[in-house]
Length: 372
Image 1 (cartoon, rainbow, N blue to C red):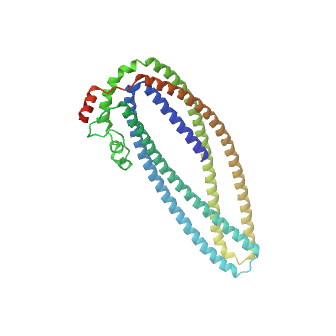
Image 2 (cartoon, one colour):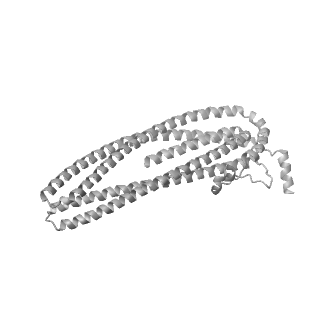
Image 3 (cartoon, rainbow, N blue to C red):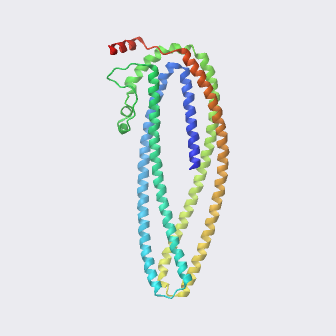
């Protein structure tokens, strides 16, 4: 979980850097490119809606898996109850027989092993529940990102200072309960029929101001390209971490399958033990069987210890590599942030020097009529 959290944090920082770079490019193009950015946000909102649908399908799949796993747990619990009844019945028979204390202790150990197997089954159930919770958290995170995009959309809308008719709402407002009706109902805006025509007019009026800052824009592009190169290096480092993480997950999956196989073997041995309980009246046979079980138990414990030591060693190696890569990425991020702050200051100065955006005459007239 710590590794996943670190990778997720790095990915979020890279996303923020990309957004800052895009924002600086748009600022350099001033109001003309703000309209294009509005269209990009509209496309991004539609993409998030598609992702939301995919997450809902994934959530349904997880719920189905949880249901199947719950049924498996119920079946295992039922089998355990049957086994418990048989053990109680066997204990009653044992009470009428002459057995040594050592024999009783060995049978108690076998009962403990059965309980351990049931605990592993309950742990599998807990993991499925955690996976479902994680899916719900991802769904909520996408809604938060959609809300953030809507806030940026409204901020740009305020900069353009457009006056809308009173019968229309132009600020984006997220309504999660209307997501199934489409993008228009979810964000409360018809981008194609309302927003796009007005921004086309605004873009036409602002194209002349773009020409005067082309030279400054070229200098900013050079700095942005340098930042993009640094970002590419950081992205490559993240990809390496993700590949290593996938390798570790594959190894853990193999280990889990081996443990499940060992558990299946033990369940089979318990079935054999059930058939042999009838022969408990023969002390010599009991002694021979218990010795055989003890030998098998020792072998399994040795194998388990070996696997655990190998897993710990592999985990430590991967952790060291990830720590080194994270340190490199953090240095890149610091350099990128320093460069972005410098560009941001430069862009703010240029933006302040351009003055406020003049409202088109036709929109100013509409605003005066509304006030009257």
